[in-house]
Length: 279
Image 1 (cartoon, one colour):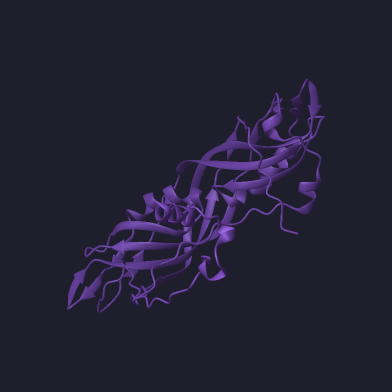
Image 2 (cartoon, rainbow, N blue to C red; image 1 turned 30 degrees about the vertical axis):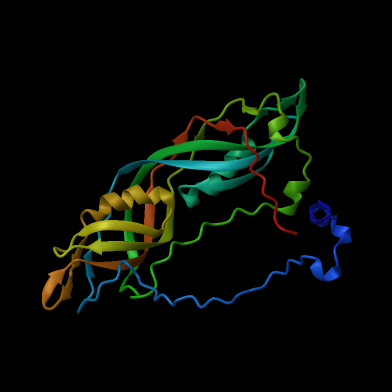
């Protein structure tokens, strides 16, 4: 009986009664692992004797489209838009006209407890218009790297100025009422601009475009280029003396002529667009 009691006391002894060499110490130990080397493979690459070559790339005329724009605006307690920053636009060439129109727009100010307050909000407008014509220049077709897959262009970062974060503003989540435009009607003149594009094309054995992936291209031009690509013609790739399907990269500068772009609606979204620049 005494033996059993002594054993129970030993098992129940507190941590402070343990000897130093009986203490548990957790020490992380790094164990090096030899990871197997995996060769990089480009899934779009296929060995050919001759890559595809562009013969003709006409662009569709009179193509109707819709071109959304998102912007962050600062509206003061008087309902004046003191600052606007384009966050995302389908047609970069329209950005300056949009910010100029927002600066002229009068708003019913935001309300908090019945009092007008300044705030940052996001607005969305949908421009409608037509791409009247366009043409390619500086066209290059590039074969694919057998190991490195084609890379998508990184998205352009929206950078707010330091002063934007210093403007007194009520958090949009706290507002009782968002700022609302008293009247908004926007129309640009015709636009003429150029933009570089980079496309990944699957050229079929018959010399047509089977599939198209946009590596670098404004979103407002994509439907237009997709419609145009149906009529592009290539000298197809050749393997063993026989035409075959192969992927190729097409780089070019596209010149664009649009009609006027217009909208009569400005939608205010209850979210803050502010992303201050790093100090």
